[in-house]
Image (tube, rainbow, N blue to C red; front, side, top):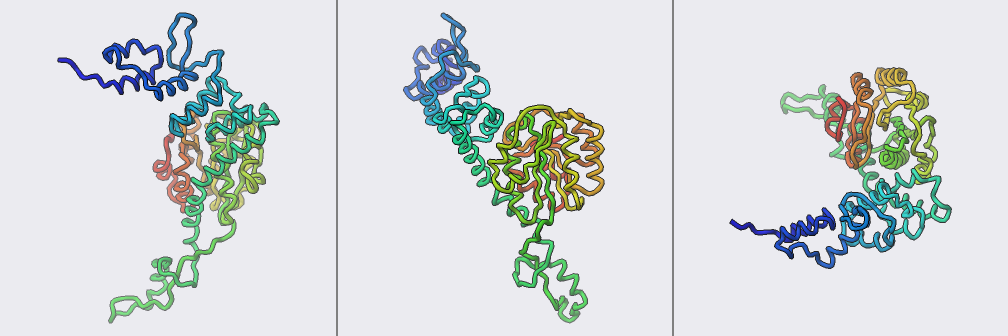
Length: 399
């Protein structure tokens, strides 16, 4: 019994597989079922510039990841992919062009960089190339980084502020009447003596309300970021998040980046997160123990301290001492959380053995998407169980 061929589906497969599949798919479509429309042909050309690999003269090409010596007209190519694909797809294609095909000229020419789709991944690439970016391009590069920073702040700032205020503002009482802010538990407890048997109820002498005021530096929050190359996107989100924390008077915020050295970014964090991001140098070795030791001097009230350690846990320093330091912090009351990733991308590979060791004494190790960060910080400030919290907001964790 003959089957009906969906010619549009065949065309979509043709766009996915590339020119080398043309003949085979044409036969499936009855000979003419693989002819692309003008718009589809333009899409195919844009994809071919990055994903088609020539096998040499007389050989067919296969769509994988290749870019021959005749690079496309970059301005036209960037315009094409932005016209034909959605923003998230553009970001993927663009990253492939830069990372897999070495199209770093996208980042070295101001005219090209202006047309690139800003993304945390792109900022990570700029950070890794920081020392090689030409002087004429640096201002444009800062514009791209600022666009990404502002985008992340729009996504997170208001929600983080609400999460912090929601967690902290219910700890003090206020004489200002506001019905939704009544502390019923405290009010009932303080007025039990005023129970009226004839009425079967309590007639409160005084009603207590939660305060809408905010205490200054109620908590210390330390963001300690691994600046190895695989953590680039996490560093971007971590830097912006640190700047948001620093803008909240209720939090005493410290932001630190490390490889084999430790860089305190707190001052830049409080002024301009773009400066802070450009203060990060991706790559190099990793000495987590040294960074944790540096951060310990900021822990003055362990029970009111949150320590975010953002790292894949590949320790090049003293691992035994690192484990001991983290265990002592947990035992003293510090809320220690290890974020294997703070990004929308996949969690990079991480040291599972070290993750298991520190999770056994109360340091949850998991990946968190930025969208879940407000829920995470609110839960930590409310002193919820960290293991349960990690299970709720984490994209992946080591048990």
